[in-house]
Image (cartoon, rainbow, N blue to C red; front, side):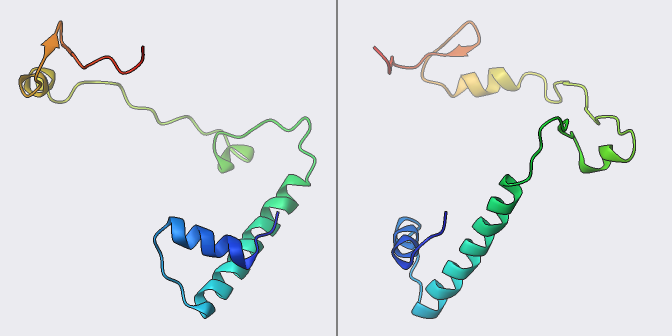
Length: 99
């Protein structure tokens, strides 16, 4: 997948950017180089390769550094609900959006 100059114009318009002709040309080259790298990576056969949780886990055992899920500010729910127009049983009450 490679982009054309018109694609860069559309992306810049959607992002509300004003790009000069030189910037558009540079952006077109950079994005197409990125897509080229992606296409080369997709071409590699990864059948039977287990995904890595971390790049270093291929060469050494790395434990996942997870922290305990502990509330650090008790009572914050009550403070948040105090500002709500409606609440019930510790939950925000909002108007129905899906019928």
